[in-house]
Length: 510
Ligand SMILES: [Fe+2]
Image (cartoon, rainbow, N blue to C red; front, side):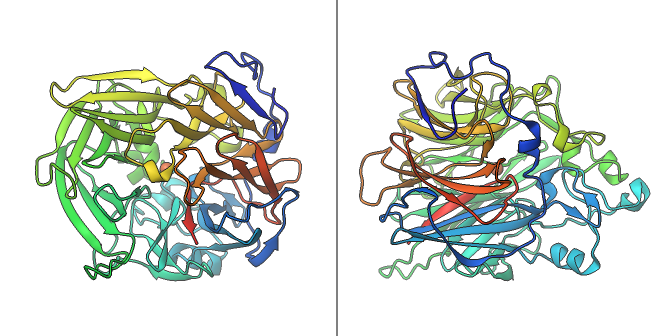
């Protein structure tokens, strides 16, 4: 076991002493204590470092999204992913930090606040009171805006993949309302919670994202938006630059994708959707997803309109077995597209009779980082496992998105093998195999680390990692700043806020 806050270096996988084959060292009550309602909205509270110092050259805002409300009128959500979205922001300036948090005023949140009870079903199995009869054939979607948050032009977008984003004020976090992005989206149109930011492979940086309309055939709408104003062309940040639609056979469940300079890479998992239990009020829509025995996963490679293969048809290639929510990165090597993803052996789900706070981690498949090399000339795919340690929420230096990268950072379990809650942050050297771990164990639980490159630095791993950590001892959240090269602790901010285990976030440079 690693003591909280220390760094451990492993030359290669399996060479470290960190908890190999040891029993899990965490207390489930510490992990579960993060599942709670947030009862305050802070407006720019100054937070100082409890340990270390906030770097003076760290200037910008960290935005985090995640469920902030998990219970109403005594009724708990069935799955935390059904909780109402709450944004936390930490603005860094001159070695100081300011903390703010605010619920997104979605239509559903406002209606339920007023009623003081649950009025909507959730996608992950949360039901209205009254059993199946009260839930059957209520197919309204509650856009809970809880999955990701990104800056686009003068707005902050709170994302939830099944419908359009909510637009927020980037400073005050006030909800402006649903955004159709200047008429780009139709009312209620799906808009992914996983945009990818092209750092400028074809000139100016872009936000590349998609929406899926699914059914017996599925259509992917691939969109690219400007992220900076260009006075030379008159293009404004937030403006749609390209837009294409491609249809594919079969039901599609696409949570994330990856980009290279020329391709948008999708992995269609071999899963089926049987909507009957959802229609009958017995399950949430996501609980009706199931691995398709004997099914064939597919890579769908869509040429980007900004790239060398613009206008060409997509490439469809058989993909290995397994289930993927998140990708790390993708890049091109002549005729090969390489994509790195976190694979599960099966679709992890919480059944209708299970309580998410008492799930048995040993019974759920763990996420493992794998690399697939897709040969575009002969359609062959080879797969290599990059790590045996359970991981999620992986990223590369955002300035190298879509290019070969030497370093990746991710949230991992404390034990070297097996499925456990995420308690450590790992830096993986993809070239040498060296691993560096910062651990919050035994009482800390990490969320997605956000890598912030040091401004002006050309060194790939130079910068910081920002991570919200649930501190089980304090029953509140800490913001931990690590040196992204050494993984040494730079500062720990003990936030006057208890943020439930969250989803995704991003950094907006000042
Ligand atoms: Fe995600």
